[in-house]
Image 1 (cartoon, helix red, strand yellow):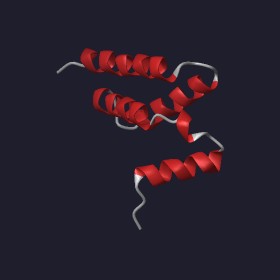
Image 2: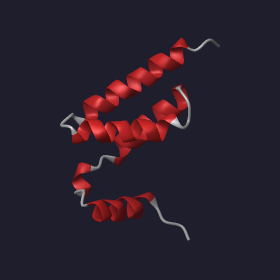
Image 3: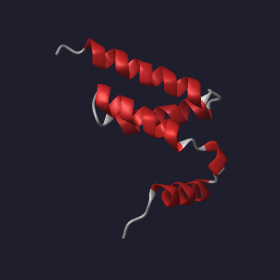
Image 4: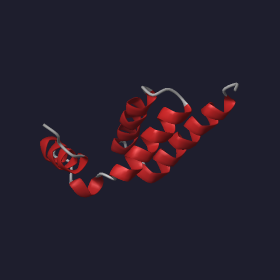
Length: 81
């Protein structure tokens, strides 16, 4: 069985009572990419979870995601080659 991202997002939103309009999939995937590529792969879901917590506490999703992406990029740049 193969479920696509759109179907999963729709179903997950319905399951959790989250309005679909509140979920910016591109923003989340971009954040996950930045964290996974610049730090450690398991940091991607942790970063997404932390973004969700911060947004749930009233933060702006785009601003917070940008801050986390920048943090991951700084951390990746600090790693010795």
